[in-house]
Image 1: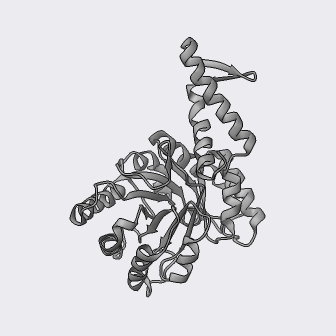
Image 2: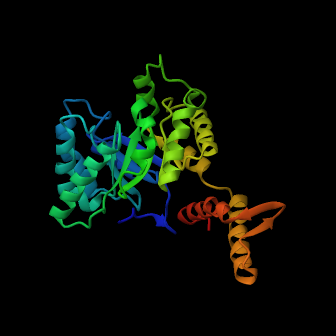
Amino acid sequence: MAAPPNDSDGITVRRSELACPAHSLKMMAKAAASEADEVIFDLEDGCAPSQKVSARATLVEAFTTLDFRGKIRAFRANGIHTKFFYRDVIDVIEAAGKSIDVMVVPKVQDAADVIFADRLLTQIEQNIGLPIGRIRLEVLIESAKGVLHAEQIAASTPRLAGLIFGVVDYAGNIGARDTVREQFALYHYPKAKTVAAARAAGISAVDGVTLQFRDLQQCEHDSISATQMGFDGKWAIHPDQVPVINRVFTPSREEIARAQEIIDLYDQADLTSGTGAMVYKDEMVDAASLPVERKKLAIARKTGLL
């Protein structure tokens, strides 16, 4: 299975995913030049119904002409159950598949939705000469049914790279009166379920948007809450949110030094005494502790801190 371009030690860094409308080449160029780890050009909510078809050509132009500077290159198609989906996938992937790393599928309800997208991508990859699995999938969990089926969705195909929790659509789907600032208090269960399902399947978990895009303090608050809950990163809807999100999801120099010490000491203990557990500054460390520390080092390498 092919991997996105910024994999480090098998870990893909997705601190920030910046979404922008696919009908605007100017906005896509700005996103490509941003500090985001991944850019997502949006054919779904970012495009009005009258723009959805024509935006495909603009999206292809963006993928084939812009300099992404090593970012993960993604686009969000319209939903599986809409009349736009199959042509979104065929028209965009056949024309620009060599320049696309990820397709984001919204409003996924169950594993069958992901399998359908996977098989369609497989047929296109075969047709245009790409390795099967070259284009990964990320899916949005943004409905009650999607939350309840999160485990099956996460395990549906090796092509799946991550789950994203979509708070706005989820709030609408369950009948919430409005979206709120304290989304982690009200939507703790679906967020935690998304993280658990992703972790069980060994894929990324990305938190949704902070709608108050000019309120960078709120964005920071939500980003900190997301890190504490175990998310790998967060969606951004404005370039100004990206530096805030990246800063919160980037380990400090102290955390990086600690991670390096733990990994080195664990490897040394294994070689010298064959021990599977050790004590580090009065803390027990074993193999279960290592993935978190390795992830910190992967982010540090990507950002030039190591």
